[in-house]
Length: 93
Image (cartoon, rainbow, N blue to C red; front, side):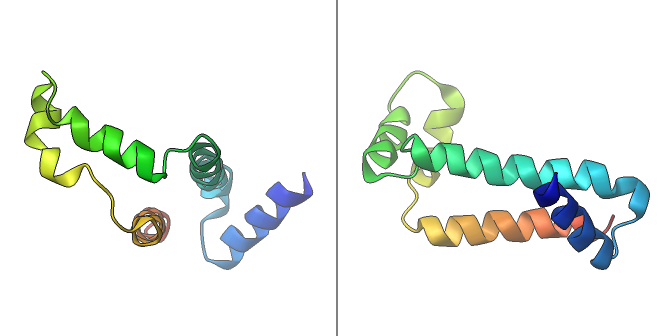
């Protein structure tokens, strides 16, 4: 409860309307937990990068179309971009 309360307080201080704070906290927590679980399960490893790159060769139309974009070369930059996207979602609230 203390962790969630700290997030609530940070969101209030950031200007998120009080009625939106619980929903936005769930969004932030889900993002963080999802990223942490993905990290533990090896989603951001070089091996998983190779698996994603090979998916462009399979019989999956969207994967073929996106084949040149499936490989991630800079996980830190991707995390920063994801966090920036999340902040853009939160700020207008």
